[in-house]
Structures are given as C-alpha cells and as structure tokens.
Image (cartoon, rainbow, N blue to C red; front, side):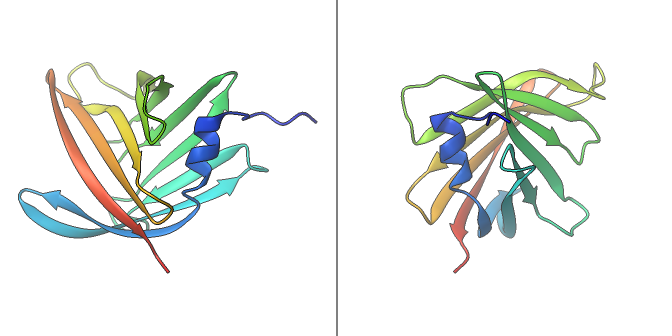
Length: 147
C-alpha cells in the first residue's frame, strides 16, 4: 500500500502531536483552553480535539487529498466546513481557507479560515476566523506544549 500525505506542510502539522495548554481571549477576558493532536488511521490523518470533554468541544481532521492538505472542522455550530491549505511564503504560518462544507445554511455562520503559527517546538498559535452575515471575526488561541 502506498503512503499518501507526503507534504512539508503536513509534516509540519504532525509536529503538533501531543497535548497543549493555552489561553483564548473571549469578550476581553483570558480563558484557559486546551487542545490535543493525535495521528490516526495509520498516520493518514491528524485529529485535533479543541476543548475536549467540554460542551464546546470541536474536532478538526487534517489529511491529504491528492496534493492538497485539507482540514475538516466539526464545529459546535453544527456544521462541517472544509478548508484547504493555501500557498504562502512563510513556512512557519500555515493558512487553511474555506473550500466548502456540509450543513452550512445560507444565513448561518461558519469557520472561514484557520491559521497555525509555529513558534518553536513547544509553542504555537491558532487563529480561527468565523464568517457570519458577511462579517469575519478572528479568535486567537495561544498554546504551550504540556510537559
């Protein structure tokens, strides 16, 4: 069986495997948050659990589709946007932009973009951009690897 997923960006995403503690700013207040990454399906997919075991738990699956690195986000908004990695000049910043999705109603909001900023082996930032009524709002998560 041939291995799929030969991509420098996917290899970079795989470095996130493990558990992370962090903070997110919600309405001007810093809140504790956590994320966990695990390789699944013989390494062909990277699973991410954001705020696992909470009412707002969300899962994102990263995988290759041919030469494209994809992210399917299983959102607390009850929809599943699919995003594709867009090329950029900064290898420490991976940006996934909305391609399509399921259960996305015309007037409902959905994740439009997510960016991962890598700052060493033990620190990364996630910028999640939500689109609703033509307006984008970005939430920034700052994570440190749990030791």
